[in-house]
Length: 419
Image 1 (cartoon, rainbow, N blue to C red):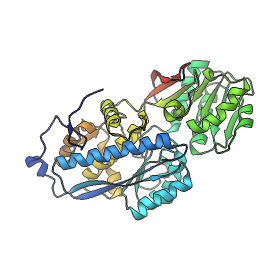
Image 2: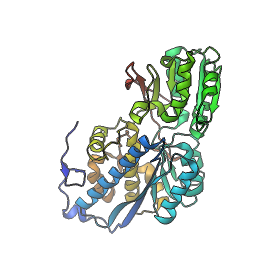
Image 3: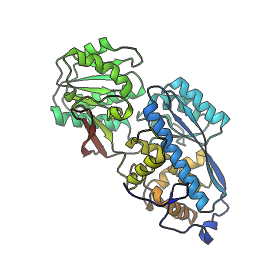
Image 4: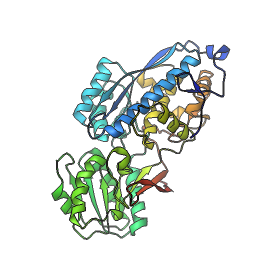
């Protein structure tokens, strides 16, 4: 674990600058308060990941506030208005987001990581009220909600129209491009979109799908769905679900005697279920966009393990929430405003070349550079970001996770993918 010098309780890694003095005073009369709200499933099935998402975003806001205080920039303020529980449900998510927007008056929402929740919140709350959302949702349909000149929905993770093609490549390499693969996916925006992209890519390359099943993941049991999933003499399986609900399908699959977990593949949300309070199945593989390629990822992990609430497990994808807090602030600083529409106009500029590269560990330097009118490229714990004007990033590296006989999972391979 990398060691850092921390400034008091403020989380600030010191080492590059002595704060204060003439440079810090050069704020050019820029004054704003940027209000954040966090939206995630904090209870129920989403809680193991939702609690981590919440902690990551809170850590970033605290780190940012400590940096501004240490730099003696009292006219620049960031606050965390509230964390709201979406319960992983679109309806509950909309109600929670309405509280953040209508009562707390937030400028930026960090979340949700469920595509279905993000879609509902974006349509009913965020876009009509012109509030920015940085979502962990991977549905390609989310960026298509940005129909106006100003994108309010930003995805700091590769969308499923890339992941679906990556899965087709990974499964083709493992089973052969002409293999028969049964697909079972949850019936929501995430499951429907990702499974459809995979189906198109898989069949176009010569593969076949004997059984393509979309199931109601909210049912108490999935016995009949499991029986259908093992029909057709498949060479392997692809599952698109979240860990807790996939367990309801995996139990009857295991009882069937016809399912081989070692010939099974999962979506990014099934990459290490044991770390999310569920179970891994021996030999099963899952593919996830690499969220740890940034130079500052070890420092983020160290910060999380030191400062996050005890009992909340670290997961690599939590870096998406962490990075989003900084992107929103740096874009606001360049825009000289906390107005979400103006912030949106600068997200691409602060996450792409040309510009000097800074990580959150050099946040003080990035702030000074923007104040001096210089171009920056914020490089997140996830990697270089490279947001495009439609609100998306392109991840070219993907990790393949695999569970061993003891139920532990690890990255066995990292592959490159060129869209």
